[in-house]
Image 1 (tube, rainbow, N blue to C red):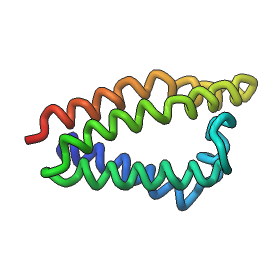
Image 2 (image 1 turned 180 degrees about the vertical axis):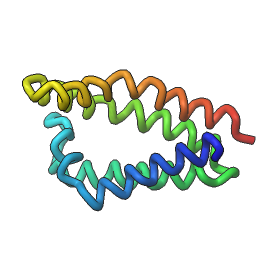
Image 3 (image 1 turned 180 degrees about the horizontal axis):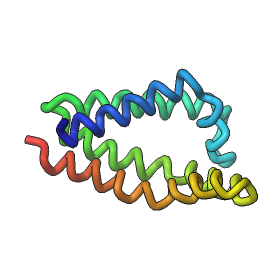
Length: 119
């Protein structure tokens, strides 16, 4: 499977999860954002599905890869909130929350790599 297809699959899966199981996503929406967390959950799900479609299609792959990198950077505050909220959680949950923080770097780089390898 190509890197672009794998990235599109990851984004599509996560996008669908925003609608199928929104509560975990609602809980990590930063409180500073206006409106209801569910609105932001759905908006980010739509964004992930749109970016997945752009990455999947060769003609829009370059833009899709750049959008993926931007999206991964944009959701970083949610990961910070999760790490903060779970700072007193059991060790396993803390490991998940803290592990998500550095994971954003390779995700951003993956999007940029897909963009730069697009025809």
